[in-house]
Image (tube, rainbow, N blue to C red; front, side, top):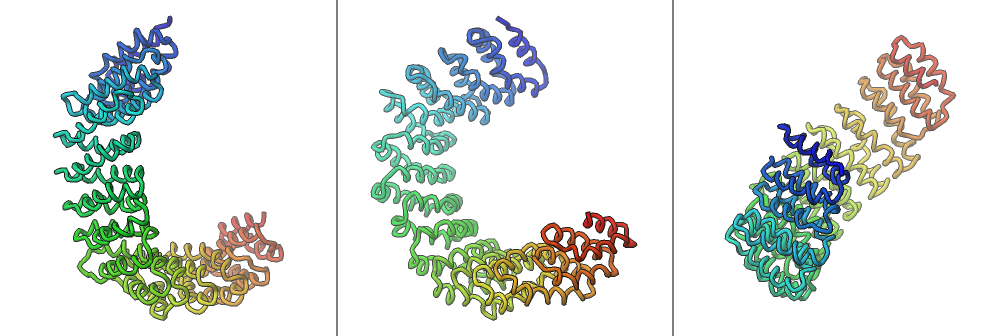
Amino acid sequence: MDLSALDLLKEEMNNDETYIKVNSIHRLKTIATVIGPDAVKQQLMPYLSSLIHEEEEVLFALAESLGDIYPFVQSSPNGLLSLLETLAGLDETVVRDQSMKTLNDISKTLSDSDMINTFIPIVMKLSAAENFSSRVSACGLFASAYPRAGAMKEKLRNKFLELSHEDTPMVRRAAVIEMRKFARVLEKTFLVSDIIPDLRNLAQDEQDQVRTLCIDSLIEVAKLLSKEENKLHTLPLILVIGDDKSWKVRYHFAQKFPAVAEALGKDITESSLIQTFVQLLRDNEADVKTTALDSLRSTLHFISRDRVQTLVFPTIEAVVNDNSLPPKVKKNCAATLADLGGSLGKDFASTRLMPIVLSLINDDNYEVKLNMIQGLGKLALTVGNDMMSSGLCNILMGLSKDSPQWRLREAVIRSCVDICKQLGDEIFTRSLQDIYFNFLIDPICEVRNSGIQTLTEVVSSLGDDWVTAELLPKLQDIYHQRNSIFRITVLHALSKLNLTVDQLTTMVYYAAKDNVANVRLVLCKVMKEIGAKSDISSLKNVLQELSKDTDKDVRFYALAALR
């Protein structure tokens, strides 16, 4: 038997550098392979048990690596499980959590005998320990122990419920968190008779955090019950939590509301939960209101059109009209309206929602405007052609030309493309085209580049006839402006279009004789790009002329395009 590997481990563990110790622990599987199962049980495990006072990083690595050497002691795992039990009782949270994870992983491969005689006694021992950290760890082991506990199931259930009523808040919190997993392995009878009454008490706990955690556990429980059982047992609890005195609990409830609605189903959501959700939208705390608006988008498909029109929309309307609210509330409201339109229906959205949309686009806050503009494409799908009123077009035109925030101008260009995809060429040509073309003369490079990238989408929607009739004349007109940046933008735009040589010739010859070297340089790049997808050999003479240009960079790119 070769013990040199074990000796090397001991030597490295005496080093003062923590990282060397951690690296050594991570090699435990290799060491176990070298020395063999007998030496692991007789030599390695006793030594590892002596490391319990090492630094946190070393203990974490040990808790992680014990799972790797479990196969070597599988026939007699008591020593390894005992060491993990000790690690699970330490104060360091990361060590405890990793010990629980390793214990849970090992439990899946334990024999029934080892489960009954070793694993479950460890769970019970940790549950009864004086230090709260052991009891916290115990909470995370019940779900693994229970399915194969046999006659011990009742003891495990009672002990878990006992931990959930602990005086120590940390233990109660751990019990509520682990209740989600424990509920999945419990028989439904005990779910109703034990867990739900326990959650009822925890939902009135003095600790905000405990009440907050109850929401997630209730969601898991609701998934395991039938519609009628949820109406009888889960719904009353959820309604209580949704009206909690603490804004933090209501905030978390608002955040989790889509999951609550999914767990309880559409019927219960619409008949009993929607009123609670509307109260969250009206909440006095801005953070609760903001989060509820976020959740609304994921909740709409659980609510009928009638309920959205009569309960949800008036609340949204009140939020928009309340000037005392912080901008973040209206910002989320603007982001929600596009999705709300589909649930309201075309006529209602046209008459009631569009005035709100216009007011938000006109809002003083930049982020409110931005979110509303970004939703216009989706809103067009619901409202249709009626959306493009002169009021909206005038606002968008003003923003695309005069807004000091370039991101707003970029969003307007993008929204024109999105609306074009939904409403087609007639609306775009009549109402949006002039707004869209403003990207060509925007002073900010990012806006111009963003507009150029959208050209392919617009041409795909409107066709080559639009390119010939509308786009090319506009590009030629802009090209003759004094600003060389705009001329460069036009050349980049040409590279995104499938044009014939005849359509290209005029601007190519103009650009080749431009008095700004950068324009000529960009022309070379663009011609190379166009040449890769189309035959422009008849314009080769232009590149040959540019290869003799006075500017060395122009010559370089002209020669590159000729290759």
